[in-house]
Image (cartoon, rainbow, N blue to C red; front, side):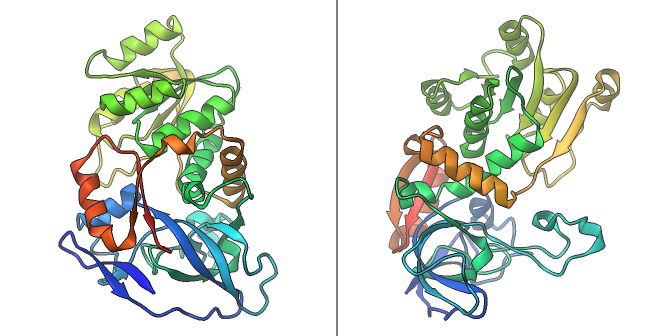
Amino acid sequence: MKSAQYLRNKTIGVAESQSIAPGDGEVRLNVGFCGICGTDIHIFHGAMDTRVADPQIIGHEASATVAEVGTGVTNVKVGDRVAVRPLKFGQPADFDKGFAHVGKNLKFIGIDLPGGMQSSWTVPAYTLHHLPDDLSLEHGALIEPAAVACHDVRMGAVQSGETVVVIGGGPIGLLIALVAVEKGARVILSEVNETRLELARSLGIEAVNPIKEKLPEAVDRLTNGRMADCVFEVSGSAPGVEVMTEVVNVRARIVMVAIHPQPKPVNLFKFFWSEIKMIGARLYEEQDFDEAIALASSGKLHLEKMITQVMPIDKVQEAFEAIDANPDGIKTLIQCS
């Protein structure tokens, strides 16, 4: 079998590796497709070298077919098509308050443990979610990022009739926008890349380039001064953090989706003055995968427009380099079979 392994120095090598027979409660998968995530790009750039082993099979946005089941597995059978929720829960801690998806001893499969960019992958059975017959394996590989979006929107408690601002129009930002629209919200997306802006508009999303028009002024104009009830910061940028408090109304919510490894200045006075809430949103729970699959199967996430290219695993290095060279792209899939 083939696997894509991070070797440091902006190198993803293709190597032969051995299939692992499933143990008790485990399932061996024939992986169909694995998406390249922003986290994978951070790994590629060496930003996670203190956490990621060398070599390490990476990738966590995967769709697959069940090839073999271990003892005690009853939720799937050989031949089932599945998406993988790549979380391995560790020993529960009082600190966790029962939220295992952000638990103290959580291991993320594809970062802390071997991931899905391989032909054969053995994972815990509880990580698997059935894909409906009308959903392709290509689209199944986008269920993981779609589940992120479903979780973010759920954490933001978005309601029908509200105005939502999404700062950042990459894959997660676009998916958050589409999920929020399905909740009945009006969505305004802020993005500096014109290609991504055009994609958002083609999906029926109002979109603003903050370089051409200041975002607070645009939101004020579009909402007749009401401003936003909920904001999602997905850009990971200092300007995104700076502007997020400038576009909200009284008792609005700001959902922090992006990873900001270094502290950035935040206008705390705005939180006091308008009773704004800040909400962190990380990963997903089982119900978010179920919602993502239902939305994807309905066609409401327009996943066919999210896939920029599909490349074979033998060309995984080229795929990562192409993403670096093409900021217009949305999602690259690696065909692992």
